[in-house]
Length: 390
Image 1: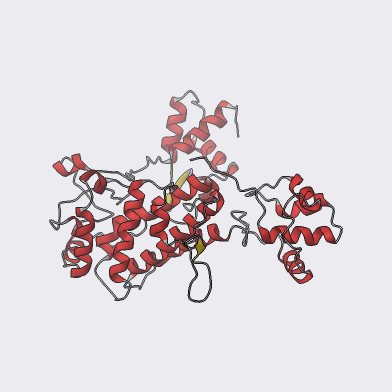
Image 2 (image 1 turned 60 degrees about the vertical axis):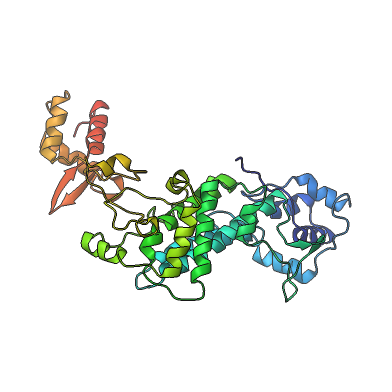
């Protein structure tokens, strides 16, 4: 889905514009206060406000409000360039998901899944509100055309379930299934402390993270992605097979197990296998017959077994990078047509290019000995072909 750039001034911004114009600010200067990388405003809008052709009913901001705006300006997040007031919903969505992952990965917490679910639901709710606001969809509850209010008089906005059920919701079905599942589990656990469910839910939680990152990039832009701030894996707990089998083999709390089974039973096999619903890296021999007890996010499989043929998704495969001693680099260079290149030359080139700097990624030091990667050999060949001599 193409990103739609928001270019409309909000009412509070129009009020500030009028206050500036009253103080004889040049329209071009006024325009500069309201355009930013995430929102480009047509300069003609300022002139139309000045001439009364647009927003005639909005009153100018007070001097206090104008001073507060100027004192806070530019009031943006220096990483994403989101405006802390104008883009508040999107900022809150990102921060809530970051908080959810950090909370789940924090050491010493016993009820991580519950905390993650509650916070991630908040993140998704803000994300959907930001999307509907940008698209001009009124996401407030109404009764007989009148906006419903909370008991304290505030507008009542849609919760996540209503956002997902709306006809203009841009979210894929697998993602909606995942969020509806987590919401259902939240209803079961929000009024009680429940242990032993982190592993049982981990595949759903991992999918929730990845889905959110994909959604914010698709709906708002790749510059708002979270992968630069968060690791790709939600949680890597102990990998000891005996410990894991003992942990996962425990019975889940009856109410949670029932809720999980009921939800799974309402989905087809294909819907359950959708990585948007639950994200699994690989299979292992089942430790339980029910899907609700064997739904691990990180599982291992022995190559060549029947399970290996049914792996739904492989996230990454760890491989050992080839490493070469300095004498091997020299031998490879000699074989490539540079017979005069010697170990002394290699040392000189390493020093000249500061090749041992960790940031360059040319090699690694092991027990006081440097080993070099293919990238370093390619660099050596590049310099030799350029005519390098010591």
